Every structure is written in C-alpha cells, then in structure tokens.
Amino acid sequence: MTGLKRIRVNDVDISYEEAGQGRPMVLIHGNGENHTIFDRTVRILEKKFTCYLPDSRGHGKSHWTGEFHYRDMAEDIVQFLEKLNLRDVALVGFSDGGIVGLMAAARTDRISSLIACGANTRPEGLRGVYLLGMRILHFFGRSPLMRLMIKEPDISDQELRQIHADTLIVAGEHDLIRKSETDYIAAQIPGAGKIILPGESHGSYIVHSEKLADIILGFLNKGKAPAEQV
Image (cartoon, rainbow, N blue to C red):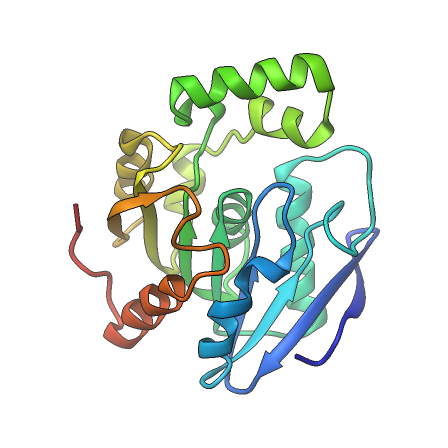
C-alpha cells in the first residue's frame, strides 16, 4: 500500500489507497465500512492489478457529508476515474459499493469489467426481515446511512441495460438480498453472468476474505461470465 491519498471529486474529499501494478481495479466497500475490508483480497490482486481502494463519502477518512445518495456516490466514482485518467477499469463493488458500481458503469465507458456483489436496485430487493429491521433501526436512530438503504436506490431497467461492461453479479446463498433481485439484475444487463455462492452470507466471502480474489480472478481470466452456481 502507498498510504492514504486524497482527491477532490464532486465537491468532496475522498481518501484512498493504491497498491500493486497493472490494469486498474477499483474496489468499493459497503455501508458503514471502509476500504480495509478488502485487505486480504488486495494482497492477492496487487500482483496483477493496480488496486485503488477509496473510502466512500462519509466513510473512513473521506469527507463527512451528513446526507447520502447513491447517485452522488456514483458520480464520485466517475469523477475519481476521470481525474486519475483510469481506463479499462475493473470495478468491484460490495453491497452499497455494488449499487454504486452499477450506477457508475451505466454512466461511463471507463469501466470495462464490473463485479457487483450483494447489490439491489430498490429497497424492496432486500429480504423482508432485513428491510423491516433496518426501518426499525432508522426509526430509533435516524442514521443517514440507514436512511439511505431504506429509501434508495432506484435503478431502472433502462439504466441497467446501459451497462456495456463485462458484468458478473454475485450473491451469497444466505444473502440479505432476495435471490429474485439478483436474478433480475443479471437478466437486465446485456451478457451478464451470475453466481450464487453456496453457504455464503451477505459479506462472508468479502470482508477480510481471500474468497473474493478467487472470484475476481476466475471471472477476469475467463473473459466471459461463468455459468450460474447454486
């Protein structure tokens, strides 16, 4: 790792780390986390890729904004790619990062490969018990990050069809995302592949895990989406 760097995008200061050498890869963490969840993944990927690990706005060492919208976060990433002049980018997003990845890939041709893990297009894409729990937590805590998940995203069919990156949609068998939602996203994006990981939960194969690196390398090395696993 090169140590934390800072960049001004979309009127916010974003902190990020950079590691490795090769094709650019951007990894985006989930709600309430920071880039360090990818620590074990990056140790493997940095041998073949230049990994960029931003902290999303309001997370980690990045600027706190007080209010959160996925479209603002997607614009942060688009401008991040533009300011660093990154092209042929492999973008990997988990949970909120997966949502941001979908939105960003629909808006820029700088992303040529996309792996979206545990992503949803609307709040109702979450399993009912999880969405209810989030609504209760927000009622008592009024967290702006919790509000983000129960009010957004709102990704349309047309938006998904605008994604022309080679795409893989990933979810755990016991994910908090409905399987029908994962199926739907993969079906809307032209040529997208899908993996449902047996025995895995929402973040078990992501957070401080080497499993994600195997998924990424398997997908990128094949050059095409793998068949669905259940």
